[in-house]
Image 1: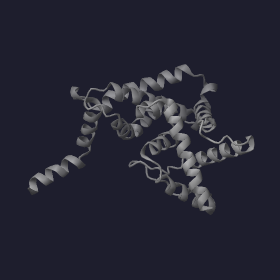
Image 2: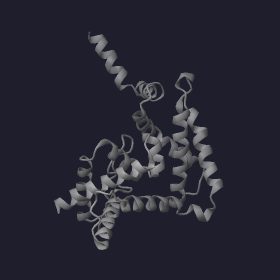
Image 3: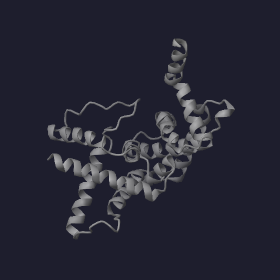
Image 4: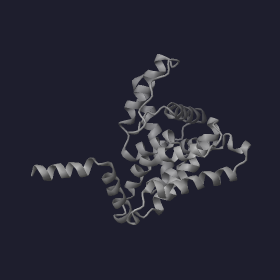
Length: 246
């Protein structure tokens, strides 16, 4: 019995076996929920491939390169055949690199400066403006206030690593951050725990990895419209939670 228990624990904790189980769930059992942990597992690898291509080091440019790398990673995940016994990293690397090179070729230097950030900002704004028929429209000033509050929550989420992945722990607060700002971020991090699983994935992938709604939709096997709804619902919950605490 002890030997069987040890073998069972070894199966669960060995990284390559965990990954193999994810591929089985995704490719053969058709469980789309296995796609996100596989993406998280290789997101850092995709970024490293983009960096090694020597793309200009300015932050705005590299943000675009990251997105092209993630596009290649998503394509590799959906086309990988685990039965061929080729390591996924070896299979994915040329596809990630090709996606980045294609992205560079499609964009001029000027267009690449802030294109990805503008795209993300437009998606967030549109998501917050969309309203269900059951919502109380209120007046224009109230609507503007709600949108501004939602954008403010998004600003706190962006780049703060409030939802840390296993290989990227939360960074220490900057000494230039005010005490009030750090306390608000702590409350926001605690409020994230009250979101449902789908909302957490949307927030993590959009704000932490910078994926567009279309990319998150591919990752989760949902429509882009559904991702927009989950994004709006998550920010609304976070905003209400923060408002109760102040």
